[in-house]
Length: 219
Length: 235
Ligand SMILES: Nc1ncnc2c1ncn2[C@@H]1O[C@H](COP(=O)(O)OP(=O)(O)OP(=O)(O)O)[C@@H](O)[C@H]1O
Ligand SMILES: [Mg+2]
Image (tube, rainbow over all chains, first blue to last red; front, side, top):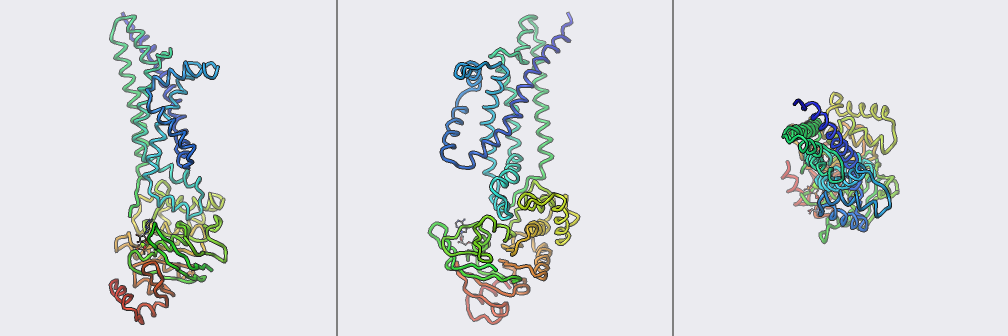
């Protein structure tokens, strides 16, 4: 009974779903997180209060809750149709935007204020200083934490089956039920590990290339 | 050209500058000396609008420096360099001319290369700050400040963070600027250097200008015992 080929193919299809949701999450939430961090940095009391409460809500509830909320709750609230892919992307982007904006905010605090001053005395305005001087540096120092978030986002996709999506894990379970064999699970595990390894490698490469940007002028 | 009139500044309840007045004329080289905590850095930071003054005025050609358009009339070189670490040496110099003055990249690069040649670092254009020595870093910082064509360049202890053997390369760049008639105010503990390049020396203590005069006045004909002691300490 040689089913290995079709099994791998089927799992890879699930892998594609996993990968797409992950990609959309990371690609959209990173720039959005920079934006949210920027807005919070402007220290508008009203805006910060709202974003603060929102952050607490997102960090205080499980991702599964948020996923189900977006998939079932949002269509009722706004009377719209949401495909599982859209719902999952929205829920994930939302959550990772908040988590990553908090990380970036923390790293902005760590940038020496002399950097801001250097920009100011050269005539740059606040916006120019933030986007050409501060954020690029904060993102570099945030890389290890952002890498962790990118990996968490892979694990997060294992929830996709709860809204009816066929990700790797779901695909593995389907075959497991059909064939009563451990093979699909082992292959799924290997696929996860490869995915994970690729992300870690990618971030390692970026960290290496930006390591020369890390320099602190301290007094 | 620049007039500082009766400025005062305090941090919390501590007065740091008390009724300080100062005229900076075109081409003048002013040496600012005084004990630690005298308010030298604060005075320089007020002139470049990094600190707000509580009272008094600072004007350049009778326009207040707090106007955003006035920011690039002054430039400052910090003790701890503050180069942008994620930018190359040349990018450090050309960033502000491009985004503040809207100068084209090629023009900014040309000007940047000229400035690098001036500070003797043409071969470092594409290096990153982390790959430079302290002395080279400070020379790039000087070139970066010059790129905005300030009317006056302030130095806040430009060699204090450097190993002794690296101070000379920075000091000789400053010396050359002084020869080129750049208007300069320099706070420094390098007494010999101040004495050599300054045409006016100001001694500050406890937020006040205590003495002002030619280097000869301050360093040789000094009658104030405290100033004499201070100078001896550093010679
Ligand atoms: N941001 C600040 N907050 C509170 N106090 C400050 C601040 N900056 C400076 N001071 C205080 O103001 C006084 C003057 O400081 P300043 O740095 O201007 O002195 P300085 O003459 O430059 O000394 P040094 O030779 O050590 O550089 C000091 O007592 C210092 O503690
Ligand atoms: Mg100082």
